[in-house]
Amino acid sequence: MNATWLAVLGGALALASGMIGSAVGIGAAASAGAATLAVDPKQMRNVLVLAAMPTTQTFYGLIILIYIVLFVAQPHMTFDQALKVFSAALIGVGAEGPSAAFQGMICASGIAMLPKTKGKIFVNAMMLAVYAELIGILGLVFTILALILVPI
Image 1 (tube, rainbow, N blue to C red):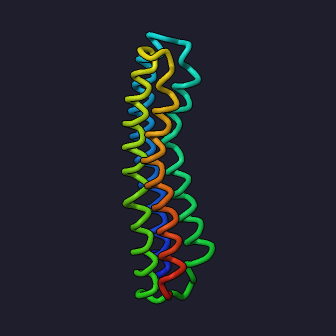
Image 2: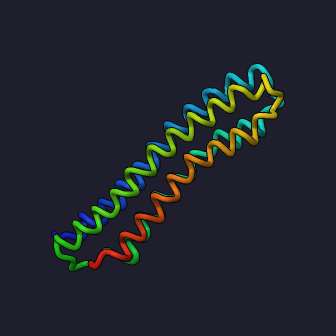
């Protein structure tokens, strides 16, 4: 067995982190959404948009994995090279999961306030959720930058 598995493992962990964070975030937002829709069914569109926001970090993790598999991992990598790739992927691991989970909490708070504000909180809630989204985007960008800039 060669060391390439370690490089790919880093990408797989970035994807897994994004998926776990997205599941937690969507769970929090959808739970608030169910309660909100019981009070005000007209908020369905707003609930769907806000509850779906934490999904994107799963895609960022997938992009990291695909980038590593297609452009970085080589069949005859040394262990040192694979360790560099794995270490770079840890940037995505640390960013994707937490940003999705916290984004879900932000969205859940916005969703909970939809009936009280008659939907007027929607844009503000989305703007606040974008801050958590930015961490996921930066995790993707910094991971790719590390993979490009670190000599392998």
